[in-house]
Image 1 (tube, rainbow, N blue to C red):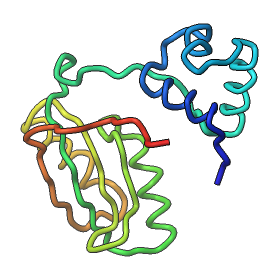
Image 2: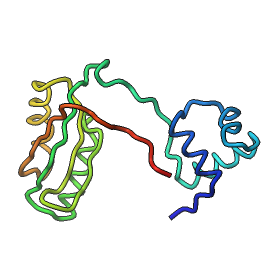
Image 3: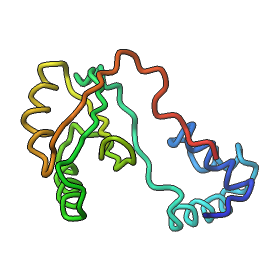
Image 4: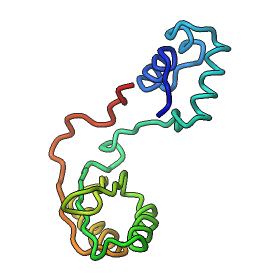
Length: 153
């Protein structure tokens, strides 16, 4: 595990709040010189703590108002089936997240689509065609209570 000192911790907290602020503003909030901040940001990125920067979009405004979680059970749990499934699911743009989990099923998928008819097409045209899929269970989200929260560093 990476050792995060108090200054790095403050940098990471501030960046999770607003990744678009200037380095000068970030340095002021953290209480260090901008040149020192630049060195720290390069190190945090090089060492893999900062994975990148992105913009969060309102899914409803772009026609992706339906959020679903899908349990996926595979017909076999062998390395080659896991590998083929993992490679194939990477190509599905509707899939926001896919996790191999321990428990009563193999993968948990988080996906976004326009509406229920679009989900039905996604289910039959994408999910059920993924390698090794034996069974799926879908949970449609009725309300997003908390999503994309910052990590507690």
